[in-house]
Length: 326
Image 1 (spheres, rainbow, N blue to C red):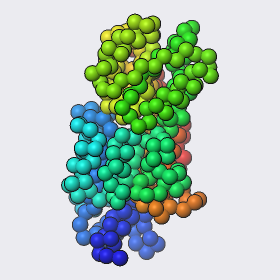
Image 2: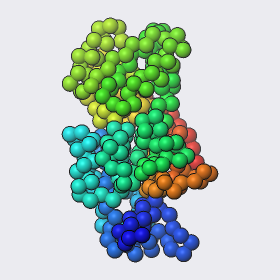
Image 3: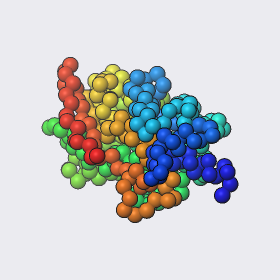
Image 4: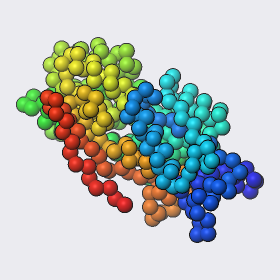
């Protein structure tokens, strides 16, 4: 094994937060000749306070495992502006040794660009279905991370939309066509609606410039509430979509809890802050995972805890978050 391979293996172990019986995490980090460069590609916008708070949650997770920025690691944060592939290429060109990718689109882009650099993904709903992982217990290749269970929440979100629309029997669904998991999420929601005897009406958009006309048409066809498909695109554009829907007197239902505070009628989904906080504990060497080991040792962790928030008039209602397993 060459010196560079040894250094990379040490870097992976540092980020994963593991220590041998004789050497602590801090001692490993301090023994590194230079800081490990971590490329972090978050969801959302650098100008949004909540999106920035998720980056800070990741930093807090680093501190929890004893890693100090600029001593043990260099955190290179690159926001998605002109497309995920461009952002991944940029952070790789700057020398990233580990990638932390948020959302399906960026995680898939990272896999396209490298099969050698370890990838820890956050908030990917169907990592096996889109080819990021071979299985949840044995991800294989160079990627592991956190599934956000949104693909399994299609029926729940349809049920919430049904409750909001009573006595109407229509479910109006806005989805992103230019997304790897878009059609599968659409199928799950459509099947849930049809099995409940509801009339499922969907409208797909490829870019935000199409959204206003799509929402106007849905309103014209009798929509009262808009169920928005969870995707990296709708997360990033949630503020714009909420504003457009409000302009057409439509309530919106999102799977991102923060959306309710930003004007959505209702939001139900995973605890993203907790996922980001736990990411530094996730092992970034999935090739070495073994059956029976806990999620932090290679397998994909499924975040089942979620928040529910909604607006009625000027009141914000928050449901309790299920206790986290420790």
